[in-house]
Amino acid sequence: MITEVEEDGGAAFPGDEVVRALLTAIATLEDLVSVGSDSNFALSTLEGIAHELGGMDAAEGRRFVAALERVAVAEPDRAAWIRGLPVALGPDC
Image (tube, rainbow, N blue to C red; front, top):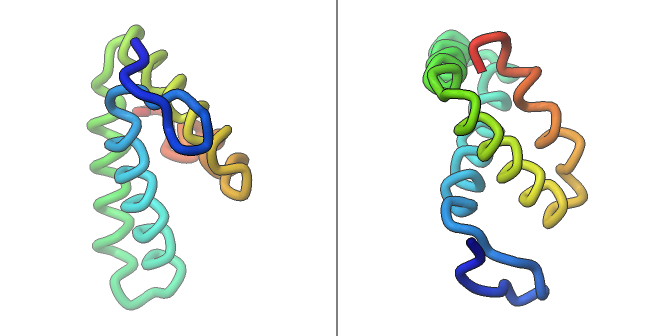
């Protein structure tokens, strides 16, 4: 269900804001893993996110991947990274 139209003319779907927020958190945690100072904490948090996402049933998983795709289309500079997240987060996701 489309609830509104974004400024760029694209459709805004309920929950896409949550997906964008999650992507921001994941990107920040990935940066922390590579920096090293808080890498264990960041890696543990990423594993927790993957575990929680892995608890989705098949329909929820499809909706999540569809939301990722909508965000990827809206953010072409990060599209490849966004589309690769389900695989990158591992088998639990």
